[in-house]
Length: 488
Image (cartoon, rainbow, N blue to C red; front, side):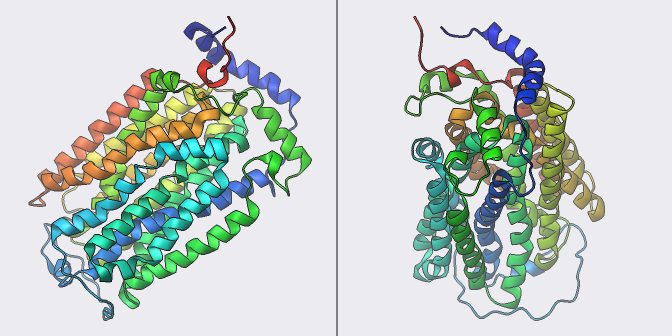
């Protein structure tokens, strides 16, 4: 017997009352010193490593090229903001790669990354996420350490290494989502997952300026050696202290284990073998997440790739200066994502807001807000303080969506959350491949009107994603996600 759409809607409206009754029967385990929050912070460290290894090449590339110093002396639209700097240390090898080769090197990561999204979700569900995620990031660490050697061998070897890094990192989000399906109580999902996934923003915040400083005072090879060593330490801690589920964790208290498993007992599928692929791909709530995820990442990847260029070519900041300024938006994104996670769960648990309302509200604010300030940044002219402020506010507000569409997979199908994230992240990787290319083709002369077009396109895509999710998004477990045995 299958539930109809109207049954699902009535469940969604009745959710606050059901939650109140459920929480009265389940004794909540303390957060302080708990295994679930230990997992959140250790996975945060893992995503810190993953993103630091992802973005460090874009900074190191400046020092890896012959005559790269010319980029620092090129004229910008606005007056340059020169500050005295120490002598730049140049001791490592440099290479004569043309712009096309550079583009292939910088974009090659995503070609590997997209390959393992859906397989990562499937393998995590079938065999467990601990080793899959751990080995995925370990592979990325190993190939990061081999990056200087690959560069010496030639651009083709470096491209191959970056593709392999992407393949390793491709399993991280699907595997972590699959693990949270067994670890995150429904009323703590926003908090736990935002702590976990904001490691990505933290990695970007640290890696952008620190990579520049490492290049400046040591040489570019140390960027890969230092961050690689940080990744090896994470892998050791991950293997020693993490388990696939509360039931297999050696140090978890009985109270916490009972709390987690009791809160999830009505949401998980009774079988690990059956996967309703047809129902998954026909699910409109899933496609609502796909569209929102694609739209958000268009702006995210465009800014991640081109913000240093905008800072240098338009606002007149040198590489040494814009390293920190380029990191400011991601610092704000990290902070608001954490605060948003706390607020989202507070609204659901204490004030009994329906999950779907919270997810949609946070998605709208986290996508429409950035669109407004992104467009506004294009009209600041050479007022660099206002431009940096608007770009920072734009990216910071994007962090609020972390408690919106970004974790909605666990609301609609916790048993298949890893697979669903693999699907949505596959589509959401496409902007990383084509978004910056399109944006760069529109800004060949680096004029302010050209950049305004780029900002308008990103803002329009963001608004469309927010509207689509608002119309078609859901907040309850879908019938196909729990009912795998059909009663005649």
